[in-house]
Length: 333
Image (cartoon, rainbow, N blue to C red):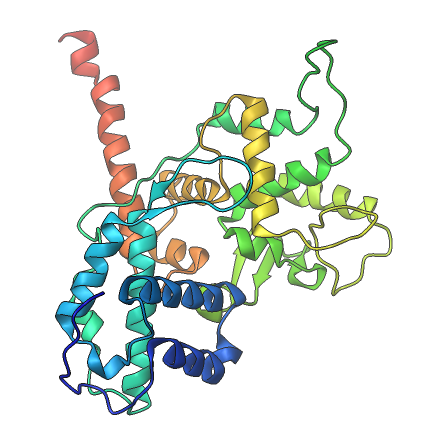
């Protein structure tokens, strides 16, 4: 347990859990379910470290630095029956926890329950390293789309069956690739959000509960028509992607991740997850002449930080291409 001091930097006797509960209650209308869940998980990490529910005004900067150091060494043991290896928290997860705690202090400051945001005085974990960007190649995308057609081959008969969800799954891959939307945004898509005439999708509740419009091309539009033609009588409030036809429950992020992961296994493509399609969209958008300002809006980012990472990645790609294609070097002139 950390040694707590009493600098009295907040005006409230809230514990961390009570403060998160209060923030969620007052801001519920502009918080997504995923954001609320992230706040709850962050609170659990705080309780795990301090071994109690600490009063926020008793925590000073050194206590929080100790907490973030603890996260660096923390090893997560997955729950469940199936054996899975324990693994440390990723830099992204630790940064998200930092962001969530900063949001909590910002809320306390705005509601005059704290004097300043102490988390902002602590550098974000892993903030000096650039995010890993690993877009798909054209050949990998072709292999994934082809993998939608058939099941894995039976080991006894070396045959594969046609998949009844092939059309749906192809459309999922193409929308992820063509629009760059997030996994949850795809799962939340309803018929009323899609305009085939304009070739647009309205994302009503993106990150930070911000609305935006994304676009898709002719080939994706044709596949949407085919998918909707299979679902007779679809209503504006119906979800575009459901788990099955018998009990049309909307697809979840976890189901989506499992789906694309299995497609990757059949296609022989490694590290297939929904966010990698977003990286591919962003890098291809810039390679094909798209502007950074437009890309920021299409991706739903509040600033240019991530877009600049994409731009640096593409610029390095152009440099490598020139090194391979340099006329002077190749012609030896």
